[in-house]
Image 1 (cartoon, rainbow, N blue to C red):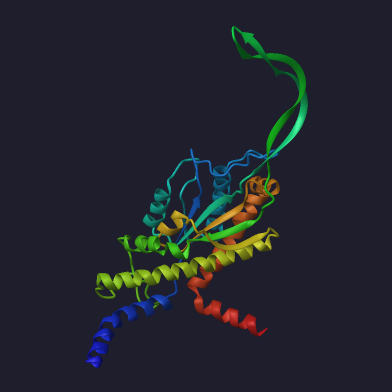
Image 2 (image 1 turned 60 degrees about the horizontal axis):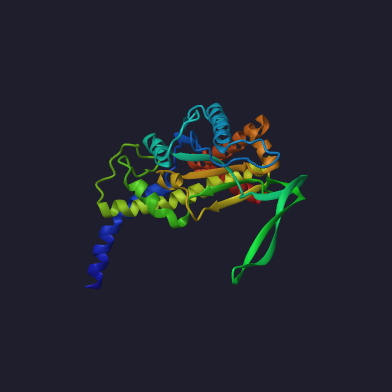
Length: 330
């Protein structure tokens, strides 16, 4: 009876394991990259509204960097389709952004944002003014057979300070990279399962359209779950490359993070996805960096270099492994 159960289980798992092995060993061709400029239109995002700031809005910073990133990717990867979610100041809700990525069958999703920290309020005295205040004089006066309280207001002039309140720029600075949280895999799973063109990646000796046989819904769900984990791993890999390239520019690289609240567009896209918080718009130096031509171009080039490294590893895994091994022996 036990042997029969093992035979039945093996019979059920064999096609799944075969497909999984093909998917894991297959070089992945990066044909389409989606670039998303965060916020837009009536959604201004974070605001550099501190004293001495440039009064810039995140939506404009992300659009400027994204446009440069799109241009740089097209220049350095001419055979790859680069699709921006927006190129002008328009509003798109996260669902629209995810739909653009999925409908274009993106192989990679790169979202550009600018970080912010809650600003503290400072105060200072900027002058003085004379104001009238009133002192109360209380008397008990006789009214008939009773005594009643009589309150008299006596005015007098006093000098009072004029206080000005202002927002203090944050000391936090640097660039961080974010991926969808491990606790948000259900959304990623749904994105894969709802994709009508959900395909199983094949090994290099099969064609893209080759029929791998009919799979059941249960098998598809198992494979989708495998893809979620693979997308997580690939997202981490790309995020690591971006962090490395940012570090090379001399900027403070804050590492890879998983936001506990979740980032919806990263979870709803049927592909590896990262979000780059390019800098703190509420920091004096970062805001100026992100608004400068040097900063915008430098950030675009750093992300492009990371994408190129990722693309090379995905498309030539053996060469990347051999190169890594040779570096390790030197």
